[in-house]
Length: 416
Image (cartoon, rainbow, N blue to C red; front, side):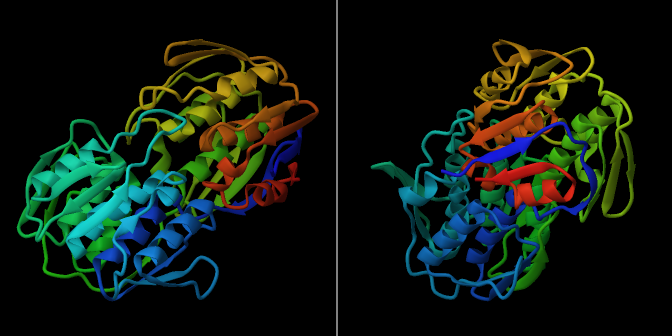
């Protein structure tokens, strides 16, 4: 099993390019199911989750070609298999995103229930409830969601909780439904907007993406299009936190500061100097960071996917910080690993109290999920001595060539 080895104590300096967003690319790939024509997607990151999704789409019957790095052309002329098997879904919960498009285009879908997730409950009941409101007949048998609909129809759907994949699944399904669908209490994440922009380029009629009410007027068919995946705001935030923690100076290209308002506000509070222009962010850290309190909440508030990284920053910041996780009930598993590195953290329910110390110690640690992996990398970069991170397959699901990019910024990091 592969591991990362980090020799800590060096500031990150230099310039790197940010990759396309995994959480935008996955639903965009699924959007190809909605048309018989070709969909060309560029700026697709080279990640394990992308490989898994493309494998699933080929299994369904899509022709997938990758003419060069970062570009994928998908053609769904013939859908030969309407099942997403457990073997695929268990490794990548985003596979549920084929449910809506398959049902809208083919009238049937058979999708494995995702099962457990390390960071907490991520139920798909909102997906099912919405599709039933649009006229689908859905049964759950032997661990599979079996959905059938001769023709979906428009409906008013109010989400009980904000769900990004639920919003994306129903938005895709609604593009080919008869009539108008209104999604209320919809997710406002930029990745939802990116998907809506792509669907509109394919001929859909979607308004309100980026707000909590999205209106979709169904059309008879969608056509092919070309679309660039938006930059990865979580990768951007991770590198900004790493530079802040190590006292570095970095310039990140191919990104968008407007996607990161809540994160940048917290970094400024920690003492970072940040300058932004059209597609670049420059960060300089002159002094030891100050501790910052964080409370996660749906976009545009502070993202749960940046909570673990800020915990590592707070471990070596001046003062005491309180981090409250409100999205996932089991997303503080990195605390025990950080404590192996001498971090001073107390956990009370969904809240962590972090007392900043002068120096973390390098240690052998284990990644428990994707963003926990990133927090351990940041901790390793600031720690004294050598840190070895095990189970980095989590990291490869969401960060493209992270050791290569960190090496380009002067870090001593390698894979073994």
